[in-house]
Length: 280
Length: 246
Image (cartoon, rainbow over all chains, first blue to last red; front, top):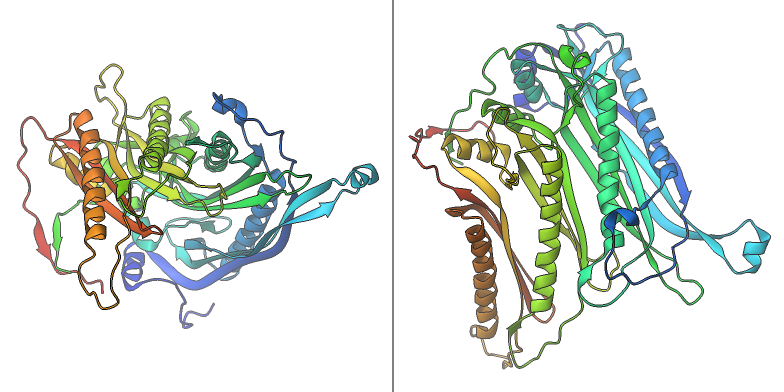
């Protein structure tokens, strides 16, 4: 890029000022995108039972690994494209990366078993299908303080990076996590009470996504993860066959965050807070 | 830490902004991990009368039970992780759409477990919880106050039907009374929870009120119970500032 060419950025005025203080030179806005059709066959619902006392741990939800894997692939490809754009622009850091929500469609669909015996018995298989658009946008910058083989990525803005640097921290890279959990039959029984099957789905899915985030951060040699952006989606799945109408629950969690590591003792007292009375 | 290769501890995860992270570090607290608690709770419809206003106690109790379980599970996770407290607790209640239960809600509580290295913790003490942000928690700790726990109160209150003429532009007293009753019940329950924690007060209270078909009033109050310091600290006088943001 020529020296005289104007830079492009998603900076606010405050961010721009902090970028100068943090010695980050903005270059251009960069984007990574992946659009794909994803689908997974869902396991059939278990036999319905009414529970009086239930061991929550025994009611673990079923993971939907294909969905999680397909979303992770879309995200990884979008990140790769974003990184390639930044490298082509001569940047060694991309900041302020945001995940734009891009779900276009999602629908449960029934398809007949390929197995002719199952087909003859009137059994069918349920799929969830979805057109997924994964879009990441950030600002490519040149950080004079570091030399890296390829651009590092982070979700934090320039002001946050400046404050982190003051506290002796540096971004190690972007970390992500994605998990889907499914239970074929929730919400049965009458009266007041906890729906243990649904609780189990929710309790398992977030922990599974966070575990992936922790593992990715550990692989980067990071000391912590901040700036977490968590997207949660939940869908019901109506089976409706054979006189039974169980309702299944599918919950997905997608996380994007920045792993950080300590580089030195804090350069200054963190944040040096002032108590301010705002006039607005 | 450059230390990372030497440090066997897993990386922390924090649902905190950079400002919150640095402020809590300034106050001597370090984050451990994000902790969550979940509970999906269903309830049956309760009979109502057009002639009489009353609290729908079954539904109120079901909501309170779901919220309590979600908070307790989050606190238990924090205790397992070795946390002394949970800050920035976010409480969410997803209504039945999506879950497609006959009538029910999913309650979730999510916060960041934190600990203070070297702090003395009483035997069997549970981690504190607060829905205050890292900035507010820092200001509270600086002033010597201690957060004790997130407290809340619900009331689902059915309002009797009021017959009105076409040009009767007067107060709907039955609905006004129902709102007052729901608020009093919810707030008194929140204060009772604070009393059970031996708190001196409740701060950062947020209230939410919805009127649904019936009409039925759903009143929710959420706050953080705090304890005053034994020896009051000198409070720094705030400075006035003109912000440059629009």
